[in-house]
Image 1 (cartoon, rainbow, N blue to C red):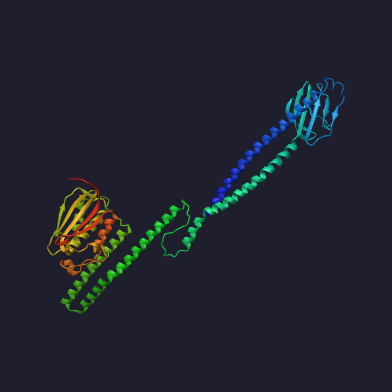
Image 2: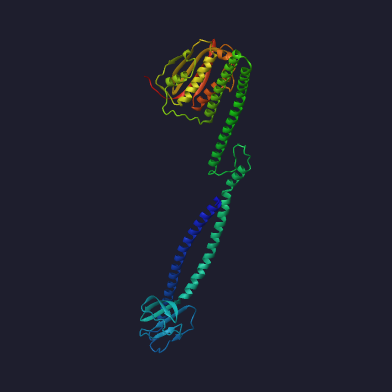
Length: 447
């Protein structure tokens, strides 16, 4: 069932039920009011007749042996005057066999000649004055009044349902426009949806859908970027590996062994590039999930990063905040720090140490990596976090050999941004670089 039909059915039934309850209450009140009004009319008629009779001489009825006055029967109304001895002095319906005698003064219901009557008896100076209404006439009057009242009621109810139908159609028009907008879109159209004069109740849904479209667009862009990056970066290593393997099969044992060694180095670089690409894709997508249940200290992060480095003995660590705890996942924090240290070791001269300082700055834990590498003091550091930008200027072993995937610092910047941290660079006075990685702390204590 559509939303329009559901609303119309629910509201229509509710309106009909409320109107019927109101009609039943009004009908009951109307019946009672009409009964009271007609009874008051009977009583007033009897008192009016009593007033007229009171103006006659006192002996006017003494010699009456039969009704003094008998008038033709009127429609549904009767009147009778009886003497103190029970003799009928006047009545309007002479054909009544039993007359209009009432058992007691006041109101009473009687069946006379097969018809129901409503009687009122008033006693004055011994005279019994009785007025009566035929109940069928009352029922006819009530029916006519109800018909007159019901027709406007039914028209108003039907009009309300029609107005309700048009109101629901108009109220749900923005949903129809939204459906039309979505149905006309191409599958790759991810621009935000704009609905003119959208009601406030629909605006949150449109905003949520637009945010979903933005996230979907970002996810598609990441996937396309990952595919493009992988195709761009893996083509050359795969070609080189294939070439080395072919040379190894054609050359002699000595030169073939060198070609196999070059192929293995290419495979290692290819594996490292793939790992970096996958890690970057997971960090940028926001769904990098790691099983570390407990936060790690800055010293623990540094130890995990150094454990994965082949030249860890060249790194000098100065832990100035041994109680600092990192709020970011330890696996990501150690990966970011490892990439920073790898970059510093790659561009520093052979045997030159690299320093790592761990300190706190407010609520941040700061890892500072200093090297005496090949970065000039007057060169801008803006391009350091660009994808696949290697920019070697000569001087370090890594720079000379062309090692590295060009993704290490990009990953560090992505991890820092992912957890509200910061990555900053500063050239050193002579040569080299200072890299500062700030990550949110979970509270720093001094031991």
